[in-house]
Image 1: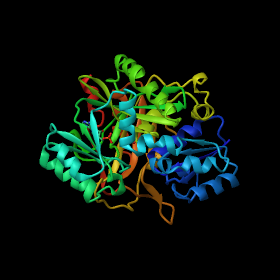
Image 2: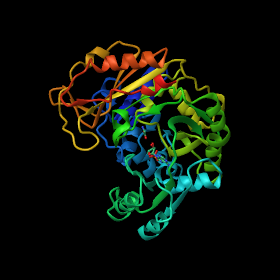
Image 3: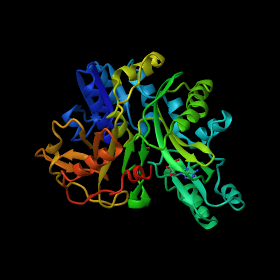
Image 4: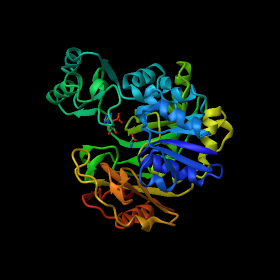
Length: 424
Ligand code: AMP
Ligand code: GLY
């Protein structure tokens, strides 16, 4: 079958890699893709928000399955637009992608259906928000309601910071219209774990857990980023935690969406915090994480196409979703300066070292071809160097070894990805 993937980052490269392993896939297209994805897929020069062009292309090429991977097109209704043209699409429709698209919606859903999360209030104007903050306990968390590239969350240590945060989000509109509404949330403490899951509207099957490293610098210092590396599985995601989440979070979320007339089909990503009072939902995403997809999909044993089709057809209950009993670590090679200002357009050397290696992966996040066919850096996150091994420690050692195989000007990485593994 012919598959079209929408997106251009490391997550989409990992999805294309999983598709390339499927016996059922004969041809992969990716719009717009990047220089690494070009090794597995034919690149299509169409942007992720150009739904009409995507639909025309998919019809012309008789695409059997289209996978919408990024949050922006999902929240804007890409799946609805493509389905309306008769295409088979993996991903939630607009009325379900709101689970990620509006934090106020997701918090209200959790409250209504008793899904454990931080206490919160929602505000439509800055004066009311500030009045509320004047009597609130600190630290406190401010969240812009809408999509903000993972950056719309401010943790404020005192009233002054919190007032400045309200101004930034609601008045200065630092995150644009995402800040028209504000969620103010209780500050929680604990380890964070990401659990991705496949959902067919009724049934949910979780993937192996992962742990992200969101801050730019070692020791979790520096600014929040899209993710500087991660590992899977998380040793802190114990059977006890899994049991609690199965009983109180996963199925309840799927049932809640169905009860609201917002049947969810696709991937739900649960951002969890393991607090002293038990697991709590920090956030939902309506898609694979980036770089979570890189460490989770490389460990997936089942054919990803079978599972995605089962999500679309509502037959997930009868479809196995299995993972290898191994581990994966991904270290992001970024452009120095990310997530603020950075230079790009530098040639990347050494990529051929990954050829024909089964347990090493060089997922491209931000790369492009030069006119003469060289691979150039083209983003803040450039490559996701990923390795699998029987244990987390071995996978980490291999991933860091492989970071030395490639070089480019301004190459930057965290040196402590997976440090938590040593605390087990
Ligand atoms: P989110 O985009 O909602 O996952 O938030 C981004 C990051 O902010 C999370 O990964 C946490 O590190 C932190 N965070 C979000 N909500 C809270 C909270 N209620 N308490 C403490 N930290 C939080
Ligand atoms: N790595 C976090 C995310 O994809 O949102």
